[in-house]
Length: 458
Ligand code: F0G
Picture 1 (spheres, rainbow, N blue to C red):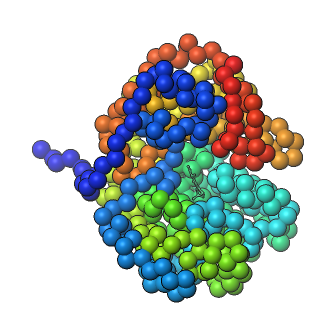
Picture 2: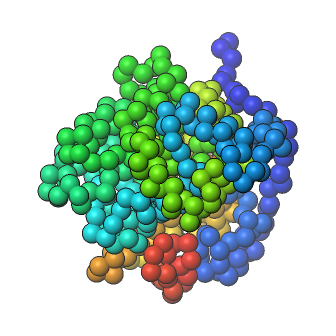
Picture 3: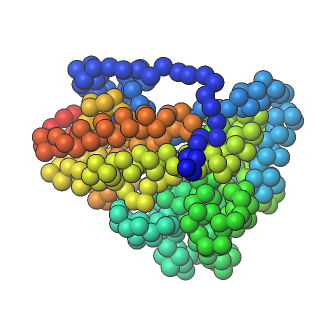
């Protein structure tokens, strides 16, 4: 008998899971104004709100914390991180920041000005927020097939190079702040970007003389997909693939809370020292001196170690395998899910789940609420609430895509927990016709509204 593939780690410390009754959850979600971000963690049984900062650190990362050097300038922890970044990404210069959006803030303060255009694949909401906040325009050039939620294309995160070239052709070069490609493409469902697409993006960046940055929150998962799906990469290591991916970019932003498996942290990587120098001033103003940015020495140490662990092939296989396990189970139950399954999350298509609820009533949020009430499983809406209003017309941006994301933290839950999640969603699916209406907004912020929005049941 062939031995099964196992997680390449065992558990040394455990944390209790909270249970509750359906009546309690009905009360709590109503008190939370039907916003998942307002729930207390004790009110949640399985927390799939995000895979960001929620991973379990290893014994080696915890030991690295103890060796943290808290010197204000030139700490050994800074050099540990600098070496790890150089080894894994190839970027010689870097600036530590407290998380991914802080890296965006520093980078965009340096290179984005009012009226600029920032094309790429789907920009994550904080990336979009930072661009729009500067009165610049993010242009989504993702391939059309990404909007077909069931098309089995291996690289649905890709940039449509023709769309990108049109944007570059139609605008003066000085208006293009940079191209940003997000790996994996979170907004499109945790879908990977192929190596040949990154190469093509580089060629266009060179042709039009613009900079190209990678939003690398899930770069290791992207590399795993390249290894397992793209011709010519099966025999390369994850680190070789990562180095090649980064070799096509001028720099990167990184929310280290994902693939580097730390609870807080981020950085910006640069190839040339000119942009690095300019960005350093903003880093000092917004984050901290350039050898610690927004991080303590111990956190930089844990992050350096996490970069190595997060690029281990066996770890990635078990991680992405668990997402596949959850997705396959839900599919077996007939639940409409986005395919192929993403690297960090399963996305449920609420339009097919609740065809009776119109976009104006936020069907994905309504589904997230029902899943919470059913089993205390917390997911998040990726739909019109998250998309914010159009900054000019102030209209809701209904794209027809209304998803519930169940993002799985790294090294935290077992497959048994995944069975519980799938059963929870199945129970809602069995009573889907009984839910006739969605939700309406009672109050909202002008930007990044989904974090604080208050809703009411219709
Ligand atoms: N880029 C991507 C692709 C992201 O997914 C995130 C965060 C960020 C940038 C911002 O990083 O949170 O460290 O400031 N994504 C989280 C999520 C919040 O749930 O997908 P951050």
